[in-house]
Length: 311
Image (cartoon, one colour):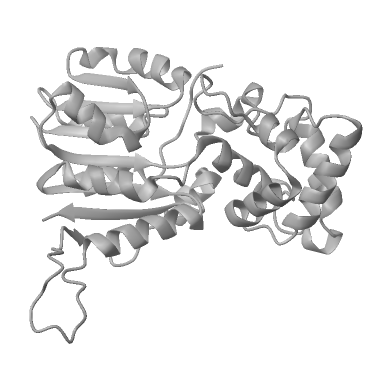
């Protein structure tokens, strides 16, 4: 299957980065290489790109897609949260800008063999972005305790019927393991009262929760953002696209922390904490996709773009 991913708010993201020829940029979520391609194209002839992705399929596709820019990019099979390590080990200096397009790619959702989609009936539960990792969705669904499952579904999926879903998963697996996306979707469907199934697929929140757990999507997100910000040149910008409220809250809170000066008790006559403001939050409110884009690309409906500028 061809690796196809339509970048959300592409122009808004690229405009935010204020691309310039000769600049060096970081794409921490390479995906379909849509943003990376445009960064290299718009920084010609000598702009550079460093990119990371957990998905080997994405990297293989990107190597082909970016081949016309040979010598101007380096791709690492790694997590953007390892930014500091990658920079230190490879001798990179400060970057002119960076972008993170968080969440799952269109390719991963549409390629049913990857086990991300609740629309696929007979596909083994997987959901790993990095298929070299041992933990997959099957392990979560079949090995986690009822209490841990309920916590994950409630916390990462914000699903009000988490307890019932976890209970029914554990009941089902007493007789037989829950092996496929279709089997899991059926259990979820039976766990939610009919009157609460009017908005979207009933399995959407639970599948999101399990995917987040498998890929540790929220773990270290704040620290990763801070490392990237601190690896930018003065005036460099980080653009972050989020697709659900859990991610967005972390990004918002992290930007707010980086934008805050002294946090000492106001009764102190002088600052003793030493905390200094590191960024300017470029957008007071996150940008959302236009109505036209939402119509063309439904996956853009939940997207929010936040942009920080390094002081």
